[in-house]
Image 1 (cartoon, one colour):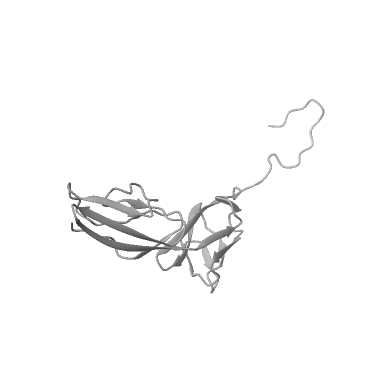
Image 2 (cartoon, helix red, strand yellow):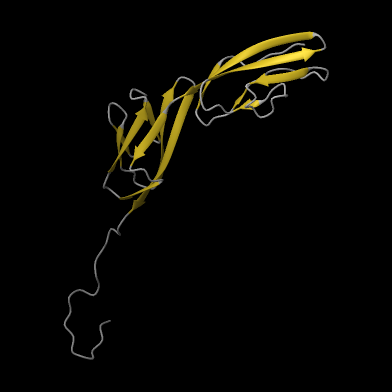
Length: 178
């Protein structure tokens, strides 16, 4: 039998990966170990490992057997934004500070959109101050994995002409103000 597996790869935790690149043959029996894949008897199953795992494909056709392996490295990266809400409310013209903490500690962090965003030199703290409500995404990147966290900056504003009408007025009891 002829088999092909994906090249060794890295993924984010909670991500899936296609393991095989084999043109399935009807008279071949495929077996994947460990069998913690979508279908251990398929030529090209999907895996969702929780830790770095070496998967082995064995293909058998009568007395002929071939074996190949693929290493899937699970990148241990985490990203937390503070405040940790999906929506940050701010008054127009009053910036709000957002802090990003990535693990491992030296993981680079990038930001999109950059409109109304002032980014610290290390990328871990931003001041959010858009003119209109805007979606922002922080991304922590390690080899094989880009982890994204998104939040919405909702801009509230007061009217430009905020005044109470009528102005201070004196009226007699029972009188009407118009």
